[in-house]
Image (cartoon, rainbow, N blue to C red):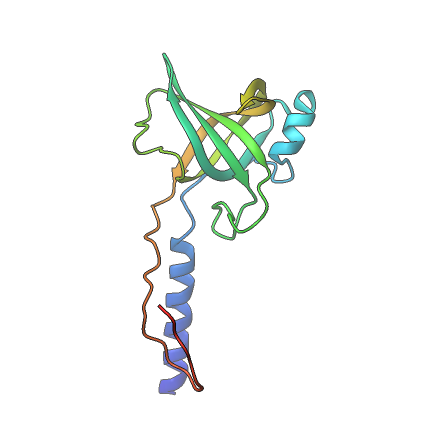
Length: 165
């Protein structure tokens, strides 16, 4: 009896912890089948559609009445964040009305956006011409920064090891 209660409590804790890792985004009406590449190659077909995309910020620029983020898109992971272990999908631009602090929205930060596709913008990546899909952001979620994994010189195992420094 005590074991089954422990299992139930553990399952509830795991469920609540799993739910807590998903950002509070309103994903109603989004079309999850549209990728940044599809939007870049078929802008007229997808203009006005709602998307849910994620990626890492490449650049943040404050403009007169909005902030523009250039994002390297990745597929969504189970928490609606960018799956950076997967192959990148394409860069896209996010436009958010008002001012965003570019120190917070710095290159390398992970972000998830819900918004409306609003055509494309022609630009460059380095010297190469590039077509960026443009998302007018309804919601943004800036993921907390990840602390680098701590490495230890202590190792456990069976066998013989040789180390050269």
